[in-house]
Image (cartoon, rainbow, N blue to C red; front, side):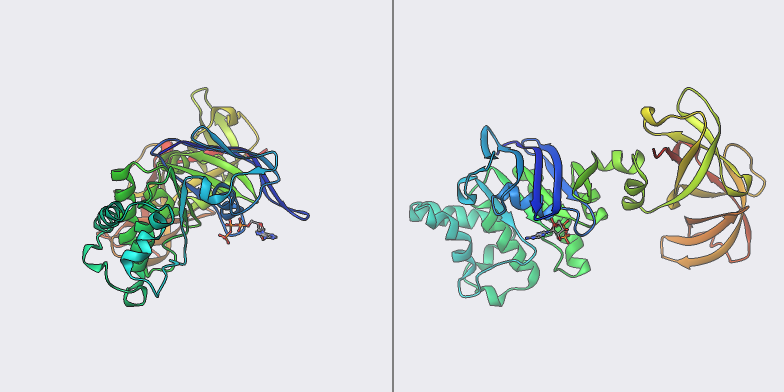
Length: 361
Ligand SMILES: Nc1ncnc2c1ncn2[C@@H]1O[C@H](COP(=O)(O)OP(=O)(O)OP(=O)(O)O)[C@@H](O)[C@H]1O
């Protein structure tokens, strides 16, 4: 296993700058995701690390080895990495055993070693009884496990994943997320994972690197990105928040402030980044649907309001509602036990420390 470090990576295709000065590290044994919308440059970044794509600038190190810098590129097979793709790329004319053994055989490992390592890899991914099956005789989930076994059998220094679960149906994808992360933790395998699915990145990663238009927007733990989004884009992309334009009405030195929303409604929130603290001017107010709670009628305190229920959708554990507080309309997720009805007036509280204030320059 080894640490990955990417410094100032730049990739240009003609006049398109696909990756702009991206820098990050993945520590030994860490699971990091590159997250962002389609076209933000995450696959290009991953392919540069794999050596499948040339970079226009920057340095990539795996362990102590510089594998890309100043136009010098170590070929993919010499980087000590393996990659798992969205298409499973399992060879249909080979058995599961042969598929997994391939990388070891090209290294000319002794037959006894190959046998032991392949069987161990198949055991790890839960395919012990499948060694003699052909690729065509496997389900999508089983093929993806073969691809995983093939990737771990050679004990790479770094595993790269390019949207590996996208082709699986929703139920299996969900199960595989847990399996994959459990396997990664057990093996302590340094891993970089590309996805456009924020819930996948949240669930699996030690750290997330959020990208947009070829740039890194923010990086941190899933909790950091959820609780302390640095920009409107981060707040919208992670966790789907209500974002409103407001003006600072009052503030205090501890980072809390009252923002005035359209119609004059004042709401208390927190600047999550000290360098963004303002005592006046415009501000984005980020209110998560799940941080709006229904409280008994008449209850008072900070950020307690009467709200009109505009519409409701029953989602099982919660009811997704549109509510109106004065002139402000918000999406709220309320407990399903006391099912709110359209047209009803309810009392809600929005905890001040869950209201995130973001200043955009
Ligand atoms: N070979 C290429 N030639 C020209 N432009 C390219 C090439 N490969 C990628 N691009 C462009 O570079 C940008 C980044 O592409 P990339 O595939 O890295 O994005 P992505 O975030 O992985 O998107 P997706 O999730 O859709 O795969 C896009 O604007 C894309 O059109």
